[in-house]
Amino acid sequence: MSSIVVAGDTSGSVTLVAPAVAGSSVLTLPAVSGTVMVNGPAFSAYATANQAIPSNSYTKIQLPFELFDTNNNFDSTTNYRFTPTVAGYYQINAGVATTTTGTFLVSIGKNSAEVIRGNQILGDVTSRLGVVSSIIQMNGSTDYIELLFFQTALTSQNTTGGAGTVYMNGFLARSA
Image (cartoon, rainbow, N blue to C red):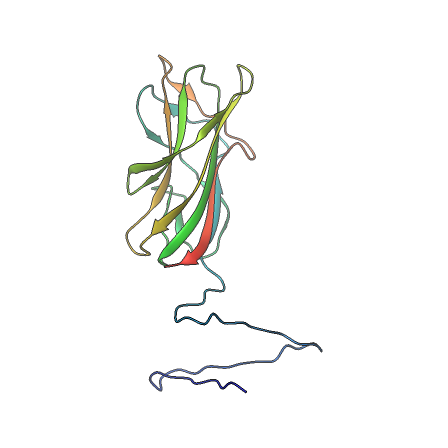
């Protein structure tokens, strides 16, 4: 039989509680030292209105609405970015619908620099979608991510805000 050893200072406590229903619960811990994360930061943010994007310039997409933000790490009022407070590897997904007729890029920026560029899914002339997805390492203190958009039409073009068309979401996939 194995044992449970609690080490550390005496200012806290560890409580193991059996489930309130009949049956068995099993928690299997890895055979290596490290941090076991149960509930890490997660967020989902989106836009409902169109945003004008100038030509030939990376522009931060404004995401003023949140479906959820489990740790209050997404700024939906000023900077429109995710700054997690837990170091680790984050799965980030984003998409931007647009009416632009030129080439466009949807990217994830880390600390104001592009780190991953997405793909265009060409629709008809009035609706096109760009998506991007990646796992990004974050330090849990100063690193942040933003959704960036670049387009090459000769004039300003619009994103197409609406349910499920301009969004970014993510979650802690693994702690550092």
